[in-house]
Amino acid sequence: MADLADYLDLTTVQARQQFRELMRRSPVSSGRQVVFLPVETLLCLAASFQVNHRHFGGSTAHQAPEPVPSLARQFSRPPSSVLAKMANLDGSRSHGGKWDVLAGAILRDDPARFTHVYRVLLSAARAEGIGEDRLPDFLGLEYGGEFALLGQDELQTSAMEHAFKEQIAQRASEGTWSEKQTEQIILAAARVGQHVFALNVLSNCGQRCVFCGLNPSTFGAKRMLVAGHIKPWKDSEPSERLDPRNGLAACPSHDVAFDTGLLTVGSALQIHISGALAKAVRGDPLTRQYYGRPPLLERLLFPDNAQPPARKYLDWHKTNVFVA
Image (cartoon, rainbow, N blue to C red):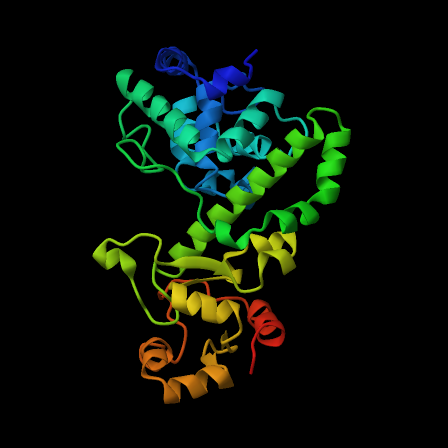
């Protein structure tokens, strides 16, 4: 039975031994699965930074995007088994293993430590002859960089604690983890949910600011786009917090203007400017440089295949945030 150190302090030697065991495993398509090895659990944790497991399950498990299919093949398990482990890791299932759930929460809260463990996994896999065609570097960290969660500025600890107060108390009463550990598990999972939400919003918006079209990737810039909620996280229902139709990608100037009610968006995706900002644009060249037209577009800019924002979120923003 694995303990906490088997996840947090995994060595390359241990990981190589476990990958050799995986390569000897016979595929099991249904029925009771063998116990997950720490390397499997840790790779499922890494996958949770890319895929929202709640969107897939049962008859749709086979539709889960990468890296779920690659991990399923590597583990000789069905995709549904990988998704179930991802669900266990965020504490959303009460029967998740005690130590792997807690290790997942600790690593989610410590990006440097998670990055190290991720590289140990890939280094061990490569040493056992498992190439990128079988186990891709789906987080892009194999040769450098440090993992960072996106979209965290929107999450205030006090708001999160209030939102999950009853859930934390209920889970803690079950006795598997202490209240402090339970809080860490649930809040860490919420932060990862926000990260995956941000990834989906950036992708849906074509990696461009929907208000002006700025595409930082064309000149190699990072973190110049913000993926935020239309209806703020603290005001949203749980399902709304993860809905990419409740998000927009924007450059910092237009993100702040939208969040503070200087900009809003109509039902036909037309961009409206508050009276105060419109007056400033007419009288101040510097303000006009950021909020005049151009660079501000008449309507939000989306790729042809994008999901437009849901009207209920736009209406909420116009009613509750916009300063006409």
